[in-house]
Amino acid sequence: MSGKLGQGVAMNGKRFADHEVYFISSDDGPIKIGSTWDVRKRLSNLQTASPHKLKILATTGGGNFMEIHYHGRFKEHRIRGEWFARHPDVMAEIERLAKSGRR
Image (tube, rainbow, N blue to C red):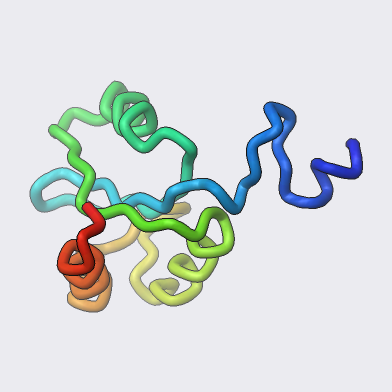
């Protein structure tokens, strides 16, 4: 592992802090909270494994650090891995992001 990798830089030279955090779900299913450099590509990859139509509910900056923050903040609503229940706390954050101009 190079020194850069240990400092939050991927092998492609992009910084993990530049990731965009996403909230993806179907109309009434659980919500995936993750981070990626390309949210639309991630949605497409997730869609291939889901029988339900998925959509991007919200995005925000902050990269892996913010993703970890959200996972901790909503840990009581975790179903499994990065999937969370549609709890009012989670939905309120999605609504807040939407109001702030983030999709």
